[in-house]
Length: 499
Image (cartoon, rainbow, N blue to C red; front, side):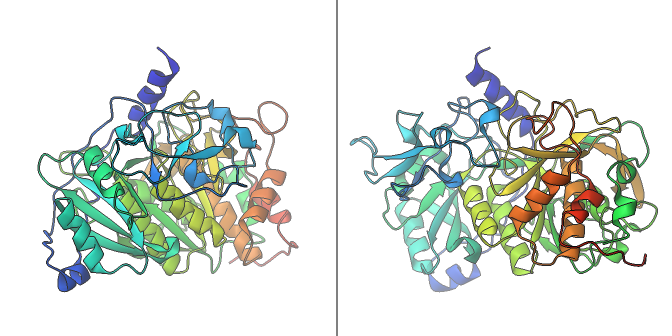
C-alpha cells in the first residue's frame, strides 16, 4: 500500500462517526432579507473523500517575507510530509513554505489562493481533508458585512442560509449555507469562491473524540505525576477552563462543585451524549471519590459533539467547534481542553491562530490513529500543546499518533474517571492524557495568573520526566508531565494550607 493510500486509510479510521452539528437559526438575517430559514434539521449525512486532500483558502495572500503560517499549511492528506516534520516548535521554513499561485484561466476565480508548494494541479478538485457534510458549505465574510450580502450570495448560487455566526475572535462572520438538492460541495465552493466579497469558503469537516473504554487498573495517575504534592501549592482556584467536547453531567457527585456553565453549539443530539465530556471534566476537576488534577477549577461546558440518531459515536463539525470556541472565549476562559482530533482545515486553523494571539492556552489530544498516522489537529497546530498517552508503566498507548508536534505525555491508558448517571469507568486515549495536562496547567495558572502560553509550554517541557530515547522525541515529546515539577518552574513556589 503506498503512503498516500495508507494516510487516507488512517484518516478515514480517525473520523468514522456521523456529526450532529446542524444548528439552524438566522433571525437577524431573516428580518433583514428575504431568507428562508428551516429549523431543526436532522443530522447531516457524511461523505468520505475517495482521494487524498488538497484544501484551498481563497483571497488571502502570504507576505513575501513569511515562510508560512499555520493557516496556510497543507491539510491532512495529499502530499504529506513525514509526521516528524509537524512540530509545535519552529520547523525549518523549507517544510512550511507556501506560495501564492493563480488558478488556471479556465476556472471561475482568477484571484490568488493558498496552495502548499508541494501540491499542484487544479485546486477546485477539492480533494478534501476528511469526512465532511455533503449538504452544507461554510463561507467567511467580513465582520461588518450585512445580512443582505449573505442573502445575495445565497440567491446567486441557489443556496439557503442555515445560520449566520458572528466570530469576533476571528474578525469575521461565518455563514453556513445549505445546498440545493443535487448540488455538490465542490461545485458550490468553486462558484462561491468567484465572489470577490468572500474571504474564504470550505466544507464543514467532521472531528472525532479521542477516547475509548479501558479494561483494568485503579486511579494511578495522580500518584504517577505527583498531584498530591502539587495540591499543597495550588488546586486550580479561580481558573476558568473551557471543555469543548460532548455534554457534561453536572449532577455527577464528582462535578457538582465545579460550577459548570453550559452552552450547546448543536441542537440535534437525541442520544444526549455526555459520556466523553463528563469523563474529561472529571479527570480535570473531580472532587469526591476521585482526585481531580485541579479540583478547585471552574468549568465551562461547550457541547460541540453529539451522537445522531442511529449512531454510536459522537462527532462535531468545524462550525460547531468554532461556535464553542467563540462562546468560551467570550465567557472569559483562557485555558481550553480540546480532547478531539481530525483534519487540518483552514477555518479551524484561523480560530486557533486567533486564540493563540490572545494568549489562550490550548491543550489537545495528539490523536489515536496510530504511530504512522499523519499529524492530527488541533493538536498539531503550533499554538496548541499536543499530549500523548501512557499507561501505569509509562509505556506509550499503542494507538497514539507520533510526531514532533507531540509536546509531552500524560496518563491516558485505563484511567478511572466519571461517566453519566453517577457511574465510573476506565477510559483510554490521548484525550484522557490531554485532560491531565489541562489540569496541571490550571494549577500553574492559579499560581501565576496571566501566565503566557510560551511560558506554560516551557515549564511543562523543562519539568517533564524524560522517557524513551534521551531528550525530546516523537513518541513521548519532552516526557511525562510532572505536576509538582511544573509548579516549581512557575513563578515562585509557596506552600498553602490544604482545603
